[in-house]
Image (cartoon, rainbow, N blue to C red):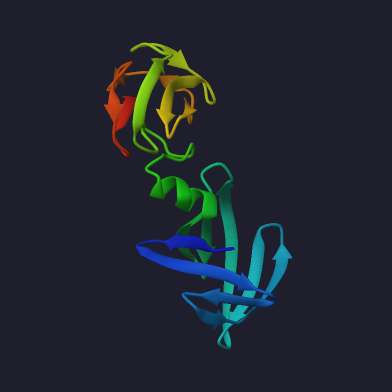
Length: 165
């Protein structure tokens, strides 16, 4: 399974093949030992590192760590996150204003919410007909509908903003 990790401004492709870890296609060998609750010691290329996990947010898929007293924030995206990004759909872990985009071209059959309406994660927002199938556009997070950008009967292209939270 491919994952992408972002550490600062650097992004890395991470894969696991049998017992081998590949980073950007290259074998990565390390030795890791947990020495306390959230404290780790690891060796990479005969260099020793001390790491402490400061916090972890499973929903946002981020970890704040200190490695040899230097702080880092690590975020990881798995195959589902990468697919949602490719389809132009936002992850529920994103904060702030959320633009809900059309995952594919289609026709808006129903708009199930109004501007100013409070919505919860998982609520049905719109029904989009694409390839003769009805697709329910669901709310990715709790919020308030701030703007409707597409209406009933409107044809939309992939990536068009349907509404904002």
